[in-house]
Amino acid sequence: MDSNSFRMLYMIDKCNQMKLQAEKSGEFIYDVVARHRPDVRLDYARAARHFKARNKVLLPKSDTSIGYLHDIYWVCSSADDNLLTSLYNHAESTREKGWHGIHNELYEWTISKT
Image 1 (tube, helix red, strand yellow):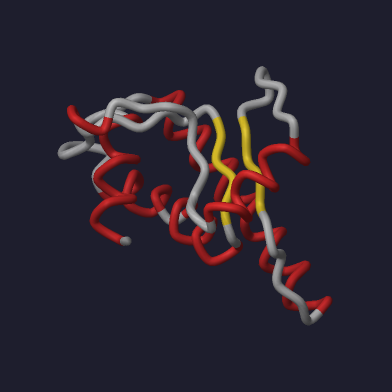
Image 2 (cartoon, rainbow, N blue to C red):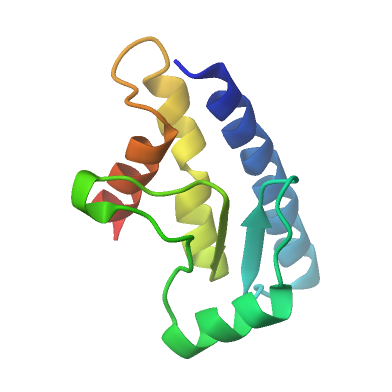
């Protein structure tokens, strides 16, 4: 398995646990969640406006005709973020065999769960 992707998904899962704890202790749910790689700059206000206008997960342009989604960033609701973040558990269970790479797995996970 791609160990870099696994580490990335692990850290996203840990961040999501912090988000869930903040929501639980503050008795609220985030309207918009933005996650991105640390080497990427994201215009948060623009991304949030775009997400709210479409009410759909915002991802970078990807080639869905070949089952491929970029992992550079996502902007979505807290519930969709929980779903996308749960890809870590799938990665952990298919780590030895069955993993088809982060871009293909992200596509499959997103399509099969929505």
